[in-house]
Length: 165
Image 1 (cartoon, rainbow, N blue to C red):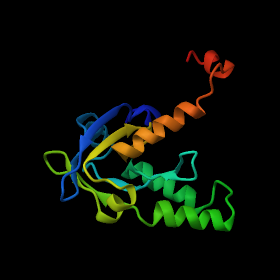
Image 2 (cartoon, one colour):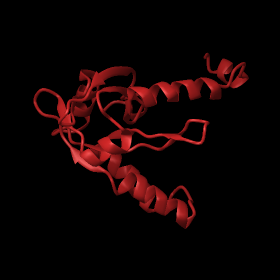
Image 3 (tube, helix red, strand yellow):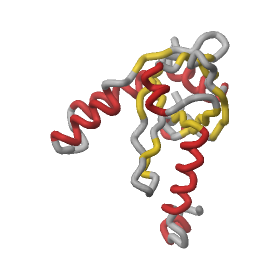
Image 4 (cartoon, helix red, strand yellow):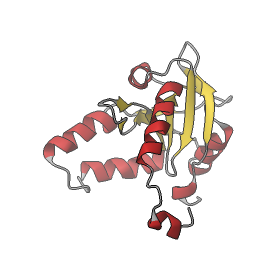
């Protein structure tokens, strides 16, 4: 198995059909297959992204099955030291909606309707590599997230310069 931190990278536009199916990009499918014999994975709600105007971007996160097992254990053991209210929110937002999925021979996956509705996935979507996982965003939401990321970007940062960025 490769370095889990670097396993998923890049951005790929795609579409989702009227039945809720989309084709996982080949590079992400290959990475999932390299991590599990049957290439099972978990789709759940992503952490909400503050868009800076009182609203939040909602998307989905996709985790290899083994990685998800470790994350779930850490959350349930409250390794983050969250308050009871925060922990319950994490359970309701991330753990409870999680669905185990597999792609068919063509790389298509049916995204559960409740998760499609949550992320407002209708037609145009983006797959975004995030290291240990990849996210799925509607085109409109991802555009707004990029705009907010530019506002949040640490310009003239010595720390970034020291990292070579």
